[in-house]
Amino acid sequence: NAGVTQTPKFRILKIGQSMTLQCTQDMNHNYMYWYRQDPGMGLKLIYYSVGAGITDKGEVPNGYNVSRSTTEDFPLRLELAAPSQTSVYFCASSQSWGVAGVFNEQFFGPGTRLTVL
Amino acid sequence: ILNVEQSPQSLHVQEGDSTNFTCSFPSSNFYALHWYRWETAKSPEALFVMTLNGDEKKKGRISATLNTKEGYSYLYIKGSQPEDSATYLCASGGSQGNLIFGKGTKLSVKP
Image (cartoon, rainbow over all chains, first blue to last red; front, top):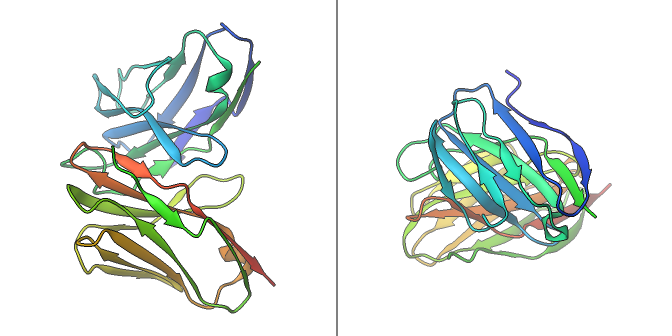
């Protein structure tokens, strides 16, 4: 299994541009997550999904959109990039039950480093 | 919003030293406590998921304890090795249904 894969690894955007960060997992996990990690800060949850067709906001959803049309894929969309969105983005997945994702370990992708200038 | 605190922020030890760090979390609406190990330039990897008060888990030289009534968890590393150098993250999950991560403890082990 490849686990959780993310593309691209690095990207530089200009203010106002849009892009989609891709995330795919091959473990047939029902839960998927998007986090951002800023220097000196912990991981902050942007959006999560408990299954195909279902998504929900996390702590910091503003400026982002997600969709989950398949079990495997959970893309994150930035519509109008802003310097405040400069960060490292991690996608994660877990095979969980009950309260969303808290009872089973999460598996993380390698991250996407995004810079908005 | 849960607030998860970790201390110390960073720690420098010599090879062979044993060490421990703390994770504090709100004890109300507690569901689970996660520990992750995060090496530089890699992704976080799960160490433990604990749910019950008094839980103790062990993986090799690393162990963790959980006190849900007072809202803290300890991570212990016995006989630290240079390869233990990493940031150790804890995260608490509550009834709102997602994990809240602390900022991590960065451990450096000198040979």
